[in-house]
Length: 294
Ligand SMILES: [Zn+2]
Image (cartoon, rainbow, N blue to C red; front, side, top):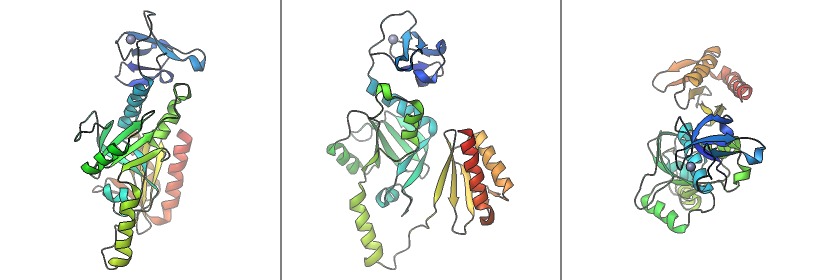
């Protein structure tokens, strides 16, 4: 099979459409280390070839796709995930109602052994919870693996990339599927139903005077060139905005928008609070910036 991936000099595992043509791609074969050139004639024929013209090294598309997906998640520092009450509780967010949330991570490791499992990635969220991330192309996690995650009480999510075959591989669509949408993402543990109904029954009927869950703070994620700005509505109606991960450009966009709408900086939360009478205008401006730069 033709080789669609190679290792860039910067040590990034890249798809052939992400680099310049020919030797200018600045890449090596990920198997043998030889210099490769990017052949980019007819789109369907894009591939890497050894500079010496020898046959391509044997590689598995499935493991290459895994490696690419891991790179994308590590570089982004997180991903959007679907949310149920069970998941939200397990992730330390309390009872939330949003259908999805951005799982921002402080640390993401590859090839870590947890118990007798070896997830593709093990992430630590900003809330300090470990989450296992599994990439799936042709083989998916079975019941035994789900039970193993349950025994470890380790939240685990599986991302289904089976539609991205070698000829259907489009870098921006693959990135979107991994980072920005909830479709194709399934929590292996905790499963939605069991805890959900129990939790509902408990707080609604059995213990009416139980401490209410953390207030519901709707969060919007504005994506600017793959980088995230969190926009949270506070109970007062004011909004808090911040760059999800430190990035000078994004921090500067946030600052400019915040100042234009009477925002004040809260050092304790590393965010800007914009008064409610300018909240919608600030939100709109952020979305427009995101649209104009995409
Ligand atoms: Zn090679």
